[in-house]
Image (tube, rainbow, N blue to C red; front, side):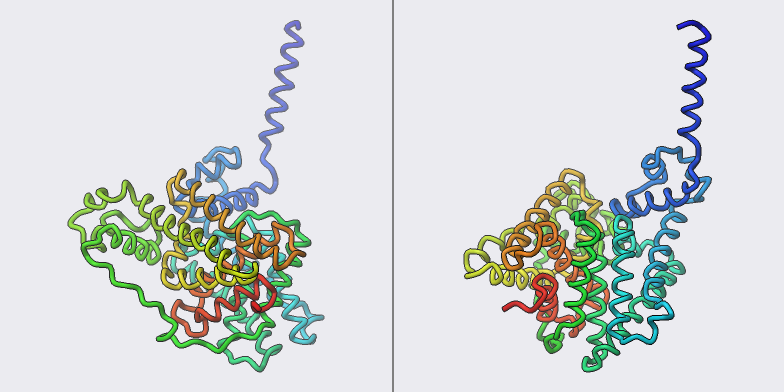
Length: 414
């Protein structure tokens, strides 16, 4: 190759390089999508601007040209997702005079479509919204209240025989089913996924609820931990703090004080780090769910009976550890990588065992569809407690068990 050919080659390469680096027209939308997915996967505090820039193969300087800060990115995407849910419940003019059942089906379909489209980023909205500043969080709350009110109003019109608070329970259950797909990566094609979510929402909104429980009889007594059991106290107090403030806002010193230890250094006699405390609490809960599977199957005469037993045990355990159930979904990204891999594997195996039982009851479901419904049923427990209050008698154990059966079986257990 002579000098002219080499120069032409260099110019072609440089031209190609410049073409590749040309700023795309939708760069801002790309940044928003990548950041939302990162926040949903690793938590708001677990992601930096450099991380987001790396995902897009751009410099952090280029990123700052579009957004002045990580919070600006976080805020924009959280409020965009809230606005989408608000928009989904606005009925088009031709439908406004249609029967309530038809209008309800339309807005649930619109919410399902929005959830599927934004599946990879919606975990941000479900589990990270506590990190919005107060004024921005109020905007988001107003958006979600509008969405919830629209669903409740149509439920009230289509099911006037129900008491008002029960409209809230069924609306929250349907929204939980729709939102649960952001909590996992089970892959189902869009059309069958839409049909599956639609059928589950319809089963929930049309079901007959058991009578509401009483808070004093439904609450589960938890034995007081002796002050000498520092290992247990650390776990319990740490989870309480993580639930109240969020994992990044809790220090080892905070945990030591809450557990009555003289100094933060005393925590390290039991755990190497704050992340190890979180991992230990999660591992205990995961092992409890796993350990129940074999005995439930062995003691049951059918797959439906075994799965019903597992539902009851899961709800009872979750009610006994309300804070931990929420913290698992919201903070698992903060568990050290190796421990997180172990926890994810245990959860995956647990879900697969439940899904096998469900497929035996409903052979029309594919393996992936059965797993997806199991995830939806499990998410319901934390969503109802979080949205309607952990001690709300309208969300008693018996009612949550019943709604999990509705999601999984499409009917009450026999």
